[in-house]
Every structure is written in structure tokens, then in C-alpha cells.
Length: 121
Image 1 (cartoon, rainbow, N blue to C red):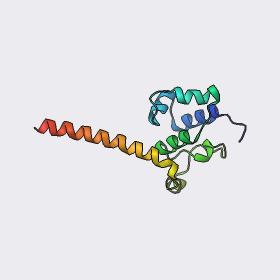
Image 2 (cartoon, rainbow, N blue to C red; image 1 turned 120 degrees about the horizontal axis):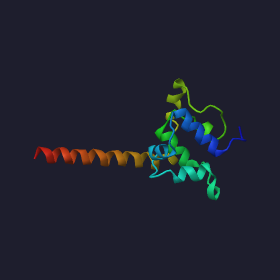
Image 3 (spheres, rainbow, N blue to C red; image 1 turned 180 degrees about the vertical axis):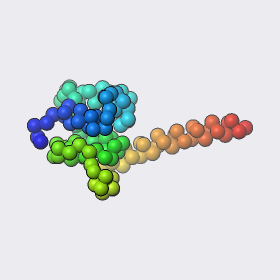
Image 4 (tube, rainbow, N blue to C red; image 1 turned 90 degrees about the horizontal axis):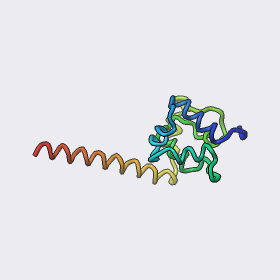
């Protein structure tokens, strides 16, 4: 499994998730555009799959096999039975990403509540 490139890993994830657009995938995992993902795929300036990227992918798509992203497995997606045990394996390193997602959702909720209150006034 060590022979596989980061590009092959990311293409495997895209294919397994049924995505055709790197840009859409990048936005889904919290990037504003695809450049960060494309830089990893093309190994620009030595960019590699790192902990931040793995965390973003696993947070958004918990069915993606973390071991596949780490080149330690050839299975891209987890089976449903493995999914529950995998999602509870968060570490303190995941906390900033989780907090960021919670804050984004909270801002969206607050904005919707403001609009609702304004329409009722």
C-alpha cells in the first residue's frame, strides 16, 4: 500500500463518494476553493496529505476509512458496522475543527433567527 500516491488516495475518496468535482469536495470539507487539494494531488511545494486534511475529510465524511488516507489500508469506505466505533475516536487534535463546524452552524442558525424575528416584527 505504500506505493500509492496522495493523488491516487484523494481520487479514490472522490470516486468512492461519487464526486466528480475536486472543487465541490474541497468546499464540502471547509476550503474556499480547490487549490489546497490540488496542491496535495500534484505534490506542489511538497504538499502531502496531513493531519488537518485527514481531520477535515473524516469530520465531513465519517464513512471514509482514516487508515486508507494514511496509506495503511486499501479499503476506502468503512462498512456501516465499523462506522459507529470510528466516529467516537476523536482526539484533542480534532477539537478545533469540530468547534469551527459548530460555530459555522451556529452563525447560520443565528442569521435565520434574525430574519425570522425581523419578518414577525
